[in-house]
Image (cartoon, rainbow over all chains, first blue to last red; front, side, top):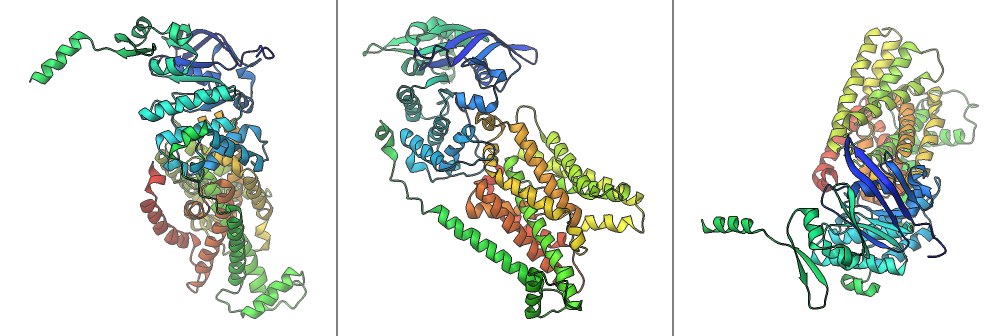
Length: 276
Length: 357
């Protein structure tokens, strides 16, 4: 790390307005090599906008956004893709590409205009599939996969992009109980193993506690808190963020769980309904 | 750590050497197409025996054709049928491949150059060139391509919803609108046109056909079309990336607007050169990519060349039917519509998932 003091992502005083409405207000943060950063915030807080700005899709911002030592506005699409790989929140398949071909598309930023992927690239696909444990899916059409499988395939595609930063936009929002855990656990293992810097938006504060080593709390377009999850997250902050009362539970192993609690008045309404 | 996640895995089926299978497929298709082309040479209302046709063709191949006595058979085979078949092959390959490109580019299995209004726009451009620019060389091809470009740009802009991409049915509908608009413009030109010289030439586009093709009319299309199609093949893998949608293609490092423009320019160049010779021919560009993907899968590195071969084959069969079914000549657009419509109904009913969701 000492060899490379330039943080992979560095944001200074970022402002962004969309159609006259301010979406992001004075955001500043440095994300260091190897950090696993969760971005937490309610719907509409500007998390996706933040991601889009980082990946160069919204160049009309004010402030400074650097990927490595260069401003994101000045980078080509290809240079951005070699710096950060994005796992999108949702993906609608149109053509039933075999999983192998789909993952192969991650090699795009490394190939010239006139070249097509070769044997080396196919090897990288195999390697990524092995790392993620989806070799058995390689010859299936990706449009027939379950939500959990598709998420793993998208992750494999991002890995073949071979970028130092991995960005995941709500990686587990539409997955079942098991896959929610599985995907995030895998991301953790990979980030340690391959020394990746991970930036992910999450909806569940408990996931943040379990899988991130830093949390950026975004609310009302600005950073409300930034730090290690266990020290940063508390029921007051979450109540302020989401507008619901939050109870903190302490488990026997000594870890903390957050749980939204129902207000008393709400209880009475339900009781009235069930009595009739 | 990987084994931990592998709990649901069964050993992967070993890939049954798809490269080898594809080689045989390409070989079969090329040989079939060549056989069909040679067979088409001896088809026609003027009977030339197969043996004589073959001899004429071989002598033409070896460059002796201009020497022998200009008997009627050699005129029919070498001056009428041969250039016609070459043009049919070029146009068929163009329709198949550009249909495949359009479907990948717009992530939309319901479009083709015809549906997108490119054909109508190109025929307006060609008609405009006939009426106003007849003295300028190559004005026909250039104007047809420009007309096609204007049409597809208009269809795209009409269908586009800011931030939400282009809904599939909206694109089909706006293509219908744009086609109708350009057909109306062609109608106006028909009124302005000189009834003796220009009108017959314009009317021809409304029907579509290869009846007037001679060696002279192959130029410059015989260079322009293969060049555009070859470039499409070179860039075929980029279409896979584009078919992921704009946002994802960008995050995969693609300059989406530039690539889309490049593909559209290549498509309208090829279609413009085709339409300015053959007139409007529907359905081939819509159904051929579906057949091609059913055979080799959706990877454009393979579905694109196969679309070209199948398009050439289908149009050749349609043209053979057009010139042999009756003693006269049926406009080829009628044949392709008669073949294409029931086939597309079949695709609609059996591949609903791919089409609508």
